[in-house]
Figure 1 (tube, helix red, strand yellow):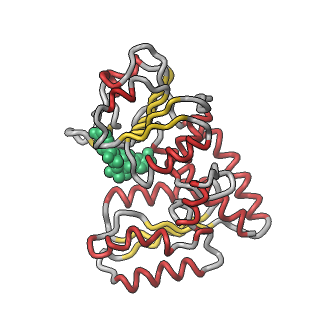
Figure 2: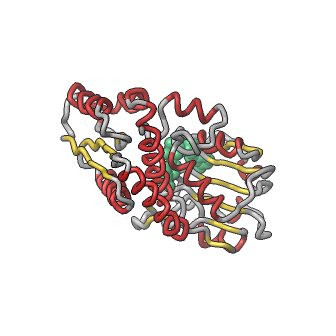
Length: 287
Ligand code: NAD
């Protein structure tokens, strides 16, 4: 079994990102990411801090705009607009979830951030590019799918002609990921909570990618026991003992398959890596 960790990919990718960043700085453009964080939701505090650390590691700038949890809608939107209109800003993201009184803005945010600064890749124009077949080399596509693809490419996991099952159909992972893999000529099956018998699909697949948010739910009974399948676990959950775990029952599945991502240390870090790739792309396109 091959353990598909992200560390080697990221370690070897950082010098390339640094080089791109240096080139931009030499030409007078310092890539700048603005992260709007509302309130003190503790996972969000960690996620935003990690984004800043990664951006700084490659020489880019990241400002976290930490707004009070009771900020008014008007003031929040004014902050967003200020970043949108600021020419020194290349990437903007709003850390989700928003507090209860702003939660209705969650879907609108994708429209409020200009497409060329939308490093999360959720602006309708960016999603439409993806739908049209864009593979993310020249456009801003959602970070987790982009990171999963990079991981698959790094480990030379074949995609063309493969039967791939994606479990979970969210806008941030399952849906855009299915589109992206289809552009790489895979045959996709998208499963979700209402799929009648998921095992029927997973047992036949070459690659299974799971983003369900169901801690260790997918056990040995979902996979073939012939070490021929790849399993990519996108889930980041806490179990009953507060331990981080994926959607796959890793201990019981790992010896059955050809390759599997661990949690933590698999897909998780790829999302920030892709975010910073998107920031560089946005900055490069701005000059
Ligand atoms: P979501 O709740 O928006 O969507 C979950 C999807 O999974 C839904 O389509 C639902 O129908 C499906 N689903 C849930 N339980 C299922 C089950 N038992 N069988 C089949 N389908 C099932 O979740 P999301 O935002 O896409 O996140 C999913 C998981 O991925 C979470 O654990 C989340 O923390 C993780 N995640 C990780 C990263 C990363 O950076 N690695 C990024 C985003 C999400």
